[in-house]
Image 1 (cartoon, rainbow, N blue to C red):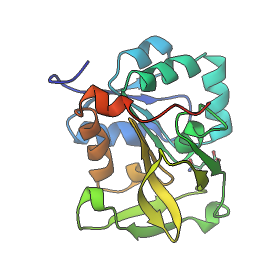
Image 2: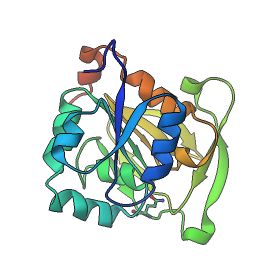
Image 3: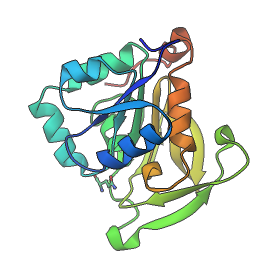
Length: 201
Ligand code: GLN
């Protein structure tokens, strides 16, 4: 475990935008590597599930039997950061890591991608510029899910225990604060991370 030592991050490199996440983590001075196996997932403190195509990534997770290692990662209180498709994979209908349901492509097609400024109190006063690309919408969530930011009325950054999710692409801007927040979560005491309530199955 990294507590006290350097944080090791892994970005699931099955498909999608893993390279940009690696770039951001390295800019933050975090040791970051692509992960593709259960053993590699086991070795990291912070696991990122990137954006991409959730159906494709879900197939790779099933093919490579990564579901259990990912669940164990979260059950051990280690931090998981899911973005866009990676957020979808965390919902009740996929890995069941957060008590929420995501609706895919809820804002329309690629051409309807947009960028907005989000107020996220946890990141300070300056708004975070957020890029939404065929983003999901969190249609429902339980009480264990803490909403850190909304766009219109929809939750767009949520947290449940050690699982942090964003429906947009924080790796595509120069503002690194959401990744920094995920890294900081790795330094929280274990008991705080595990008291997230039950993992939705
Ligand atoms: N629309 C994609 C999906 O449903 C997610 C898009 C993204 O990650 N940018 O998987």
